[in-house]
Image (cartoon, rainbow, N blue to C red; front, side, top):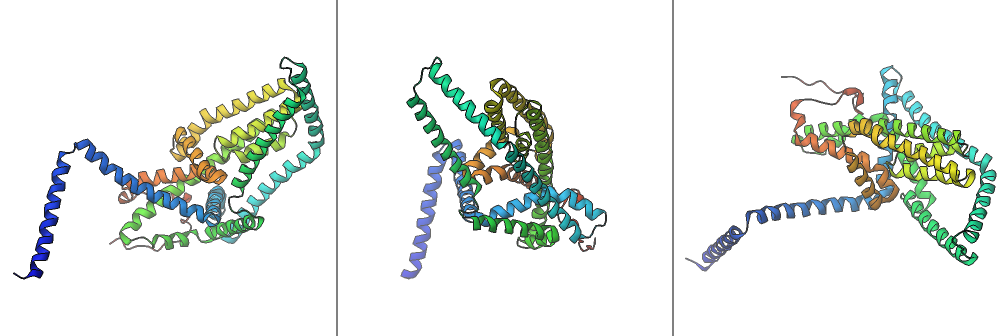
Length: 395
């Protein structure tokens, strides 16, 4: 036997011997440890993949955030858009009405809030200064007996904390970029994506499914359809919840004589799209205005109104409406909103719940192999259902 033949044989024997030793060592380990180790390294691989995906999304945030915003707006306008298509309105006219109607509604709400603020701002400012002076006198002459220097130091620390938090919120709000040009680019990109999705969502999705292997396309198609229905249900439900919150807190502020009742309602409506966090922040603004303008007694009743509306939302509306719409437990909603805020600030908190709902439905759909049963979501709720699909030969 030649030397060249002995080397592969020796390598094979060494590999077999090492494998035997590894098998013997593994056999001495407890079964629970072997199982935990098998799960652990797979979990590490999945966590690494998710971490890389999140890193890529953060690096491409100027593209990803407009895409997600456009998808969420599409889900909001989709019921009205499909209603017009079902009533034989031309597609181009339905797109124009949907987009311009959405822009008009948002612009009208913002203009109404600014108009109310400009009318009552001077009065609110005067009352705020008066309340601050009265509170300062109470701290000096009251049981605390603070000095003017101590009060000034406390106010300086409070203003510094507020400035830091304002910068944090501003950086989160400007997650598309650090300049006005980046924000404008993101807005134009969002509008362009919205128009493309409404015009040819079916064609875009069919091209996307062709990127997957042929054997996986039915599963991908069915899972994405089910997830899209869930996103539409989330958008409908969140719009209804936001409207109820805005009416409840805004009406309570108006009846209690709190100034800027309409801007408060607008803030509550817009803030309600960020679950839990938005409601707390906008409710705190309403209570603060009641405190500095109307006094502690009215502020107490304003706090009762805010808490009552939030309790109704959290214990009645969210479980009944949102629970059935997105199939996500309220505890999971709180956790994903907090995690999204930590990872991506305000955009992360905004998109956390619909993304979690989409992933949850897709995972359940794939685990049950639902595409093999032939069941599909209702056609009227699907973004690609309005595009005619070629008939297939049943044979």
